[in-house]
Length: 152
Image (cartoon, rainbow, N blue to C red):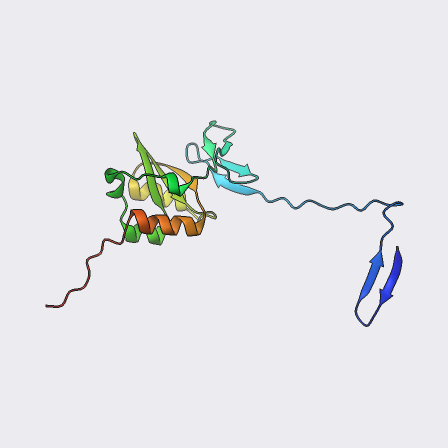
């Protein structure tokens, strides 16, 4: 290593890579999610459209969804009001038997899955979307249904 410049608080170096190659460490992030089917903690490298298979029960964990392609039926709109969806950051997208699929954002608040199970009294499957996309989809699909204050 050769010092090629020196000032008060600055030292620039020139590294001869022919003698000793520079090694860069790759930054990796892991995400840990609770599998909604079996409650196993699943470690993911990223959220993706296909998700990651749970090692215990083989269900998909960490899936993402395109909210522009989502169509929420009338029966699903009755499950969640606009204010509830906005405050909890959730949007119901399907109900298959006893399993309710909700879109939410990552990271999840502590005990979030348990709260949802208690509120809806159903099995819950979570899929993920970006916060801004979810907020606009909730406003578009589940408008605030509170009645306006009308003075007589």
